[in-house]
Amino acid sequence: MGLFSISCKKATYLSSKKEEGKLSWIEKIQLRSHMTICSLCRLFESQTQIIAHHAKHAICKDTLTDEVKNKMSDALNASK
Image: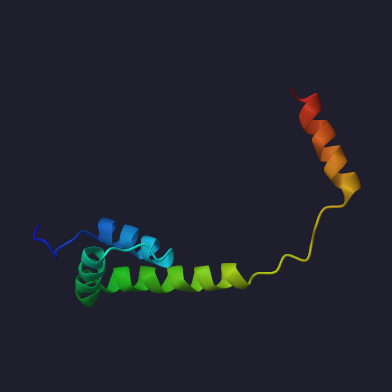
């Protein structure tokens, strides 16, 4: 493979890495080049972005009470 030709496996890895904002300039070029020709990787990247967006904005309203936490802790300790 050439410098700018990457596999779908590497493209999906780079797409996930891109969500963390940790791509080097060469990785950005490789990913952009691959995305121009691969519709499945573009779909993967789109879905990854949607999941990341919803995960960042998810609000968990349900929390465990202290009583439930203690019961869980007791159960875990009993199983040791």
